[in-house]
Length: 162
Image (tube, rainbow, N blue to C red; front, top):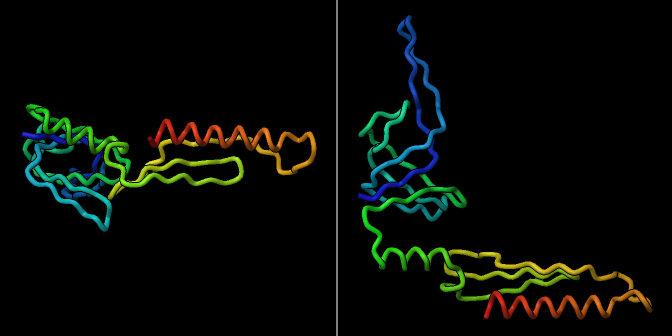
């Protein structure tokens, strides 16, 4: 089946010789065989439930665990067989240019940020920054700097948005 490897947290119990037990929360890397997937839109996370499929000093092999993945958290997905349908879905999900609905260019004095917006993502694809003098005195190079800025913005639109 499909596997997911990511950093997660697990309560670990330590038993002392006196019979007392202490609980500690440990950060571990765990690989599970996925049995159930749940998406939480309010918390911006996805949860994978399943059984541990790799040896670990804190979690027994076959023990049930749920891994929560938030935004910008690294994870590794493993499949027995990656067919072209899964590869196309993965390429489309990772490539904002293919699924972008709107392109946005935010500009201020000498700075422009390019974003591609999808239904679920705003991804910055480029940034242009040109030093434009604040004063418009003769010989300050204001016009040249402004022209260079707009040329770079135009080139950025052609390269990243078209």
